[in-house]
Image 1 (cartoon, rainbow over the protein chains, first blue to last red):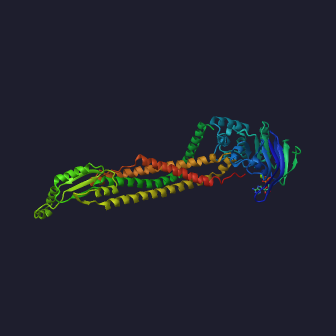
Image 2 (cartoon, chains in turn red, yellow):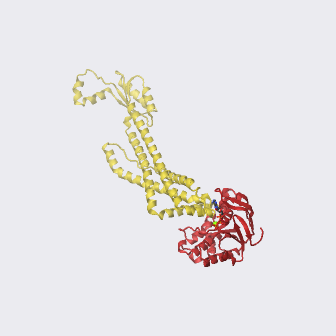
Length: 223
Length: 304
Ligand SMILES: Nc1ncnc2c1ncn2[C@@H]1O[C@H](COP(=O)(O)OP(=O)(O)OP(=O)(O)O)[C@@H](O)[C@H]1O
Ligand SMILES: [Mg+2]
């Protein structure tokens, strides 16, 4: 589902994001990206979300070379990738329901279908009762769950999350990670960057460690 | 996407932005008022000039001119000439003032009457007062006057006056056009700036939408509708200001017209001017928004 072939990313300022990284994630796989600060985790996810383009090598998602995708096809591509952010990036002046509905509105889905899918997504993250609330009235963990509901509402094949538990205490973090694992069970391919080795150790999922822009260990063995 | 869905999206955005505007009534009201007043001014000037032109047209005798016949021309000959001229296309009407009538008229003036008594014979010629046909321009009137041969001996045509009037209206029309251009540009700038601020306020939202795969068109649409609403509402305010002003002017103007004994009336706002005003404000609103959007939206790219 996701394949990186000798991908390097050098930033205009001269910073080295990734060096010759090769990595494969099969459909429905859950992969944790670990590594110290500056290792290149965010860079890797940005290449998949097409927030950056690779300097060298190929980034293939669902068989498509996304690094070569023309600019005007970026929006359509991003609609097929769910993204979860550390600061969840919810719109403060819209209700939980409207936040989760946003990807569907953008995709031009009909009103009735939107209502149905939003409730299904909120149900999956256990927040159906808070549909009408504004994000600020929710706890940090709940806000992140709304962010996850928004990422899955359009049923993406791929979901990427950059430190989704970075702002949460250990208990909430575990709750969020378990939620990811439950969603992964329905077949979404997931790439999640995190610092928190202790947290994911108990989940039994694949771990890829980066350092200095290179893959140093992969619990699944060589790509 | 099918057309019904497309229409629904646009309707949703249009109503949504209207909702956004109504949630900040003070800011919206002020902006709309400024736009309305800026647009009312050139529209009012336009209506004034239009009325002035109608008024000038109603003083028809300004265009009349007199042709004096040679001394000794017989009255029947003068009458025949009058009929002949009246048959011409470029002539509206001809009034014959015979030498005798003219003398009678002078006799009525006691100051001149004694003078006339001393005269042995009538020194006055027969006179034809010619009213050019409706819509004849100054050059054609001049040509008509020039075409008159004997027994017409002399033509008195006040071309200077006609020329001056036409030139005056030319200047006025241009001044109005210039004012319109300036003030519509001002409206474009006002709306453009308002939209620019709105884009800056919504910067984070725009970034999120782009992250979620929104196209430039999707992000742009609400801002364009915002400009459209500002333009439309501003145009309506301008119309209200204009109608109120005309209503206030109507009474005094009627009295003025009565004093001058003319049928002069304020024509008010015709449908074409009103429609033109609304279309102009709509275009200025959408144009201003388009300008702001094209300059400031592309610069916003999602950063994570
Ligand atoms: N926009 C940029 N311009 C220049 N250099 C950058 C840019 N983004 C990242 N880098 C560099 O690329 C390297 C990898 O950064 P990246 O953000 O991927 O690390 P990370 O693993 O996500 O770290 P963290 O755990 O702190 O989030 C770093 O050395 C960083 O300085
Ligand atoms: Mg990072």
